[in-house]
Length: 314
Image 1 (cartoon, rainbow, N blue to C red):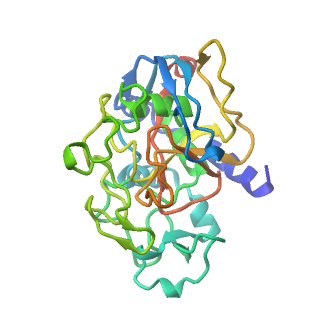
Image 2: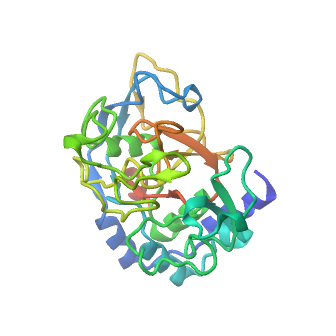
């Protein structure tokens, strides 16, 4: 871990705890799941480097997880009470999708091979498109431009956890086995859009078939069978685990698997409003990607969880 990332980790773990009454209230809002056995991953992966195949049997202990991604309003309360500054604020910039900018030509710096992302000075969680933008009308949208360290800081304050990848997928499936989406295998159930992803020609034309160019409210679209919203599309969600290939499929179920916790590459799940079949159809419940723990973009957020066993020892 570099000096910079070590400092971000230290800051995330040093955030003062929320009052106990608030911590308990935040816990009470979480959905309780029994855990148990489920089939994790896909039969076959379109992206072999994602390691989301083959399927493997997993056994989870009981846990709790939030119904939605953390909202701008929730993150604002955290920042107001702690004074925490995100990685994007400290670094002074973040990546914004070009069509969300009034004039993308003003921001010529892009990551290699990803011209639709523009480096925007001043872009951060409360100014998602840079200076002059705000979240005043998006309080119920997922907070974005948050790095993994920022999500960890929120959890430190709240007395909660980032979900493990296995917990996230079990909850995202909503009780359905071996399906692509929380509602089944049809991308358009009953002919209707059920998630916020890209329609049209990526990355230049979005027909807005689902109603959104950028983020949607965290309760947009119907919840899954467990009551979780937007586990496909909208924003990528950070998981606790570092990015590694899944453990080999064996004769016995994996029990509460967690990827290694050192290293900088972290897992993200769920896809985002930029996912499209022509480029990145990682909008399935089994899909996974990776990003550096100090990376922030306009399509990355998080939801929280609670490891019931660990919570009992706190």
